[in-house]
Length: 423
Image (cartoon, rainbow, N blue to C red):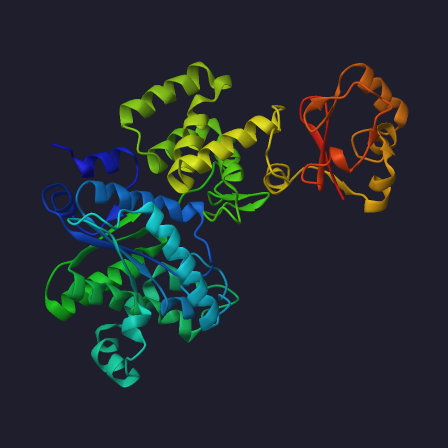
């Protein structure tokens, strides 16, 4: 019999639980559980993906995931893990973000399974008509100020220069009531969240006990960081988002491909559905043949495929081949721009291209070469490429016909020094 709890422990996924009973709850019962996301942006990011993958693991074991999107709490702002007050979003922005996030979630969890199909709920639905006086009387009376002040998320802000507003201070009450509502209406016995949510989760467990004299449970997973302690998914090029219009499959693939040896096995345990013996084999290869980067390749493939599907993975792998010199073929300019987003570029007036420009003149005004003489010598040594094809003619006149989709020309010096030329 599959031991879900032990698998989670051995993967390092469980950081803390509210009760030892959770082991039997996960292994011997089929329960409803929930995790929440506030709509602070129109796309979830790869850090959020860890909780989604964990929800998927529980779902595969027969448990029903409830995804709470915070239409109400998103208007308040969770102080957990934040050292300053959040900027409040308007209702229109929150609504658009919610729709976009739900669309992503429906691709990542199974919503069709009759026994454990996922469901999405919005806490704005139960908060929007709530009377303040009744809320304070029925819910607020169960909270003791000393306990609220003792929460780490509150203490850290109280001791900072920026402090904490009453609005964010009350967030833990709203999230606690979310758990009460889902416990009552949907039978949710367990809340899943990041370790920074521990105080909010235990507040909900306490409120259920006080309200219904019954037990509910909490399970927190680690916050994913790199070897420097920075949040996973934060790169020099910005956050790695799940929306392919913001972060292309290629960019996600490359980010994962560049994972440090010291972190790749941990990420495979967190983010992939490979078995632990399969991951152990990759760990052995990371030690015995680190130059092959087999574990990184598997991580990049597994995560990109899960988020973007087979088509997205194929696109990412093709883009990677193009970046390392393979034929461009029929790849559109829009996709090439995504592949070469971070390389140097220049823009030319359309009239200059219409008249034609000598390749040496063009190369000499790019960051690739300091002079026409240097460019000529590189051409003679077969070291210059146009759209990944070797250039042999130093007298070539570049016209619009050389530009992909009439928009983009890719120049390469050596193996991977690129410059984009756009009109």
